[in-house]
Image: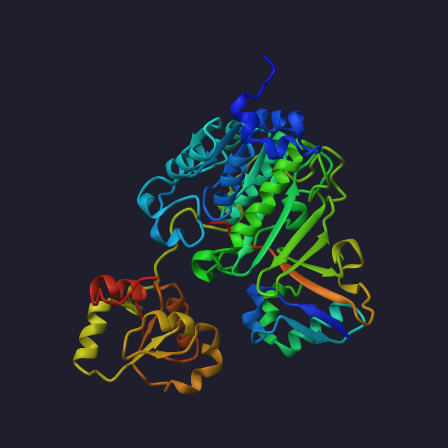
Amino acid sequence: MAKILIPTPLRQFTGGADIIEASGASVGEVLAALTTAHPDLKKNLYNDEGKLRSFVNIYVNDEDIRYLSKEATSIAAGDTVSIIPSIAGGR
Amino acid sequence: MATTLSNEEIQRFSRHLILPEVGMEGQIKLKDAKVLLVGTGGLGAPLGLYLAAAGIGTIGLVDFDVVDVSNLQRQVIHGTKDIGRPKIDSAADRMMDINPHLKIVKHEVPLTSENAKEIVEQYDMVADGTDNFPTRYLVNDVCVLTNKPNIYGSIFRFEGQASVFATEDGPCYRCLYPEPPPPGLVPSCAEGGVLGILPGTIGLIQATEVVKLILGVGQSLKGRLMLYDALNMKFRELKLRRNPECPSGKCSVVKELIDYQQFCGIPEAPPAPPPSTGEIDSPDVKKMIDAKEDFILLDVREPHEYQIAKIPTSILIPLGQLPARLSELPKDANIVCQCKSGVRSAKAVDILKQNGYTNVRNMKGGILGWSDKVDPTVPKY
């Protein structure tokens, strides 16, 4: 079971929830469980080819999965998965 | 000639001078420093105020906007008396009032691929207080190409990010996000709203990093992405790595400045308006209401917007809920969709048409247009 931290821009697709628990042995499985429970998230996380969008970064604890094993990165009980989309506001 | 501090400056900066980490040497470093602030808005306001107060010698300002009353909720460098003035003048006046020893250089232009290098080259580092993806990639790329650190901050609603990019051996914005999101997928502060205090917190993190970099003290945010969640009052940090394909001091991605509007998928010309057959002017909608015509005025904004201002006969189904709530709308109904300015309601019209509704129109200009053309007592927000 991993804890997924949902960023503000995506909370509209999780009914406002900022933390969601999901099970899975890898990042890919955990995110699949998440998007099954909240299907509207899918198009915001994945492109039409089913690949993670390049302006959405996924971290396991404090490490970027691009520098681990990407979506195959294994998840241990108690890990925190963070979804960090790019934001541009400043004014 | 070596920089010195006058007696007035020594008094002014005495709390810095008695800090061993700053001292006379550090204060002179600050006075010798040249920092460019891109934007004098939410992030630029605290940056400008505190960097002026800290004794930075030269601050360049890039902005071409004018002060609007809706800015004052967060852009604390401007005041009510400044409404309608160029932000760059209003910010400069306030900063000079704080520290008259400061030299301000005004660049009252949009930062573009054509002028960015020439402007940035005059400074030691850049603090990014912009509000859109094209300018953020431009600021990053010009910093990479000119070897100037990019002190980054970004905000959305209750959340902020900060880091230091484009140092000689550190990661840059493109290492974090290689590509921008397509237009429309990530709302701006104007669309999504922002807690007024939030840019204060993030802008001051940026200001802290600027001062530390100049002084050469402490550990900078280089290689770390600081995340701030104001609602839960949590700071977190994530590791940020340099793209492994970029050797130290050399970026393999940024070769030259490009067309950033195009890079961010924003067409040069304004997007084509929806077909005119599907549009209706707000005064014509008013006539339909007055004539008690049988139609549904469908407001697709969010409930909290509906509380600010609404057209009395409208019903509310937020755009995001529309696909799931189609059963509330008879297929043969005469429907006019409406939002704040007409963009979301055009999407609603598309959704309805794709689902077999034929008699659907978009009210041009949304409730802002309604306030202009029909009922000025309806507030604009």
